[in-house]
Amino acid sequence: MSNWMITVEPTCLNEGLETMTCSRCDHSETRTIEALGHNWTDWKTSKEATCEDDDKEYRECERCHEKEYQTIEALGHAYGAWEYVDDNTHQRVCDNCGEKEVSEHSWNELASIDDTNHGRVCSECGHQKTEAHNLTYTPNGSQHTKECTCGYSVTENHVWKDGNCDCGAAVQISSIPTVSFMTKEDASTGGARFDYDLILLNIPLTLNEITTSNLKLSANIIGGSQDEGVWHAIMPGFSGTNGIAMIGLASEPTSEREYNCDLAITISDSNGSTVLIKNYKITITLSSASVTGTTGNVSEIN
Image: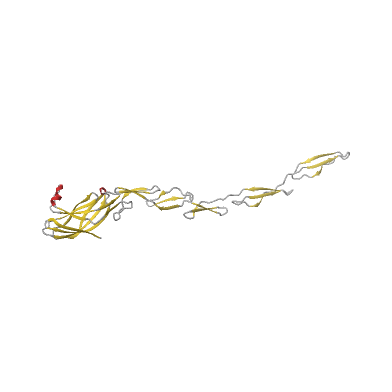
């Protein structure tokens, strides 16, 4: 028999044949040769993958030059942390390609910051948006409670300015006080004893969200002329919703005479805070030792 001789060359995919022939009788035998299989090179990139686009790579058989391809999925963005841009938006940047993603803030629940402001914090970038409380007031006697939708709540004393508080509580002297007169005998019927006739000052009040039970009235002589005796203010208080003060002389007048008195009316609340101060000039013409025929006039001092 001769040596085996290749009659059909094997390829990467197909088997080959080899034959051996008898030199005397021409008898031959055939056997297969296994397919060689591809002899691949290393994978090569034809297109680099990006954050959004897939990558294609291939390898080539060094024998038959057949090519095989495969896809590598896009890398996906590698975003950094969210960063503040403005009060409405924030952004983050991809570490791979530099692309910016802009989005609206993701605000958490409104929360109180201090007595003046509340705010929301973005859960992604940490930016805090601050704004003033939207306060509502509930008066309660000599105090009020102020509240905001953020949960802020505080009860405090009224803060007065010219008889008004931001909560709506108000105390005003609605018109110029008027004077009337009382004899010392009439004034003494309540058990107290007075030596001289009295001048009654009636102070009309307008009240809102507060009552006289939460108020205190004081009347103080701040000046004037006294030809006989010294003016003094006594027993200031309230009669219903009006204020009242009794004013007298330290000595009994002996003749008809005009007296002038500057009087400070102060209204304070039960916390000791001054609500309102008004100054008035009172002019009284007194008859001798009697209120009979006495006249009086009150004017405001600005």
